[in-house]
Amino acid sequence: MLDDLYQETILDHGRKPRNHRKLPNATHRAEGYNPLCGDRLVLELRVEGERIEDVAFEGCGCAISQASASLLTTEVKGTTTALAVALSQRFRAALTTDETPEGLGELECLLGVRNYANRVKCATLAWHALTSALETGSTVTSE
Ligand code: ZN
Image (cartoon, rainbow, N blue to C red; front, side):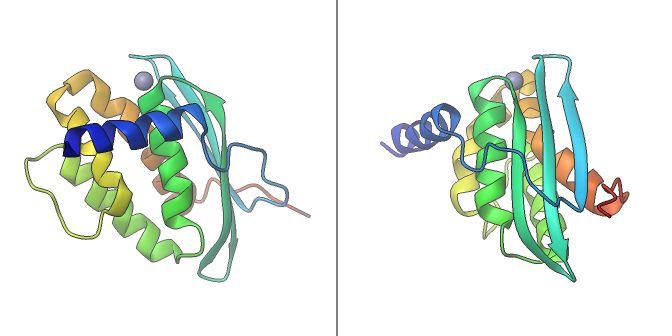
């Protein structure tokens, strides 16, 4: 029952990804590529001060990678960069252990992939891009 619900969320986000568009005036940007599956995406953020004002992604790949990127945008929009990085770490840690930390929200639906080692990279792709955009400052210069 719960599994069906989780599956439903992934399929819904995979079919109709949220915030799948180009982001005007992006301040941060990172690309992700998963050669195991062929997933590609570009994640763009507009950060003002500490706050993530907007976030969007473009690209294509399997349902897991698209759903994960889509859920990422809905989870981190409006939050702070520090909270977004913390969530990324929590989510990626949860995928490589059997523990389910608090506060993952809808992201919990993706934890089913931890039983499939080669799909874990699909689920973490967008989150690696998020961390690299925010931490290594691969920023877009907008004049
Ligand atoms: Zn994939």
